Length: 457
Image 1 (cartoon, rainbow, N blue to C red):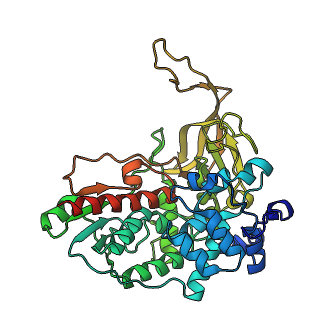
Image 2: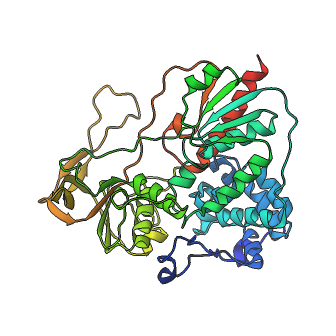
Image 3: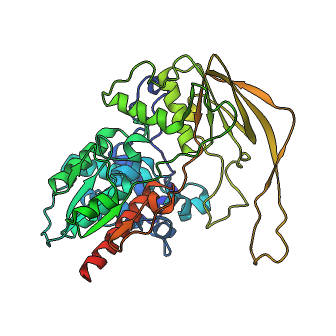
């Protein structure tokens, strides 16, 4: 620990975002970077706590105090090597992780200003690529082949780990490029797709084979009898829909339909006028208050929308601190993203009743304000049992004008049949929709399970 008093004298400093008037006209990354001196100074704020809760909070078990200290000292290569021990893709998590470690940071709990771990992580990763610290490794092969179905964060993590263990890995991807959610679900203004391509290039040079436009089932792979094990990392492909009257109207879309198509357009793919989903000149309504909804807002602005409204069926979270989610729970507090800052009407406790339209096209949505009443736990329930709150209508229904409606209400957890013992499921495919960092962790853990299984054969 180079500067034991830095947390007292150095305030938290974030890189911030590009100016709104500049960034809404392109899909370039909105987040800026600090210069090297400021970044190292931010790393000095890490206190090397006796009990560093950041270790516990990070699904990957990142050793933040260790690489923050190396970063503070200007030892960038050492910082990257320490980071790589636990995280194979810091350039991804450094951009899109909600930074569970920062909400666990002792400084966050004492001063409200956590160490800038996520930004530090991204800076280390980018410096590593720039300076050549990211090297191509050629593991010694052990004579077994493993198939990975799906190239999202979980599949990429499993493939990388298995490759380093000496397995010959083939990744099957149904789409035209690798990345899964990273490529098709997250807008380029949060994660430039060249960042994904750069990592895939390294993986290919290290011996991992990628087969694109290759929809395949585990049964089909098993029938080939050329793989010792199969990893299913197919994500959560089914979005939660909203089955209310008028759902069939043109202009009502699942959020991922908009996001994935826009990313494909930026990659050079062309769509006909009827196929194209665009917010240009339209009043947009986003139903769902999470990150996917936020991504829709930012995309709508860049497509040239007239207005954006976002509604959420749950109550508005408190600002800053939520006594109902104390540490060590994740603090459920109001989140304002860069997309929200670009302009958006936000409303909570709103239930959707019906999509309205003319000539087959959506023109508005009938909604109603609601309240949530606590439910009584039935007598005889186990200790600690809870009951779902009851939704109660409040006031009269009203109409929100909308020419484009985007449903951003999450995804359904996949159901799987019983697989043979050499088939392993990981990531969102196993656990339901969650964070990219958790998917990466699941992929790494699954690789260990695969290795243990094959080693015993």
